[in-house]
Amino acid sequence: MDSNYKKIFKDYQFRIEWTSSKPFNPEREAVDVVLTTKEGKEYYANVATPRFINYVFEKNKRTGECASGSYFCMPRLIIVKRIDKETIKATIDDLINNLEVKEYFKKT
View (spheres, rainbow, N blue to C red):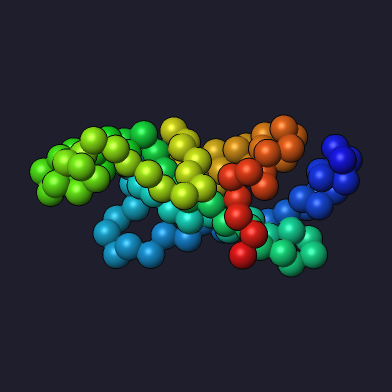
């Protein structure tokens, strides 16, 4: 399983999808990350920073969403300190090495 699993993701590519018109802050955002295998299969995950999560809790406390900021949930969430190509690549590489990519990235 180990070598076959890693073979599926060998030579993968990824892209960060962020569609907001506001300036991008790599330490306070949430984005979609799409991982594409060499065979063209795509997997995606939500990636956010701790500062984004804190912002959402505070906003929800004010707006009453999520039981007035009592909780936050997002499917397939990966939290990173910073959203940039190096951090995302290191995260994906580690998930592949630990055979966990399919737990956090959903096939499209």
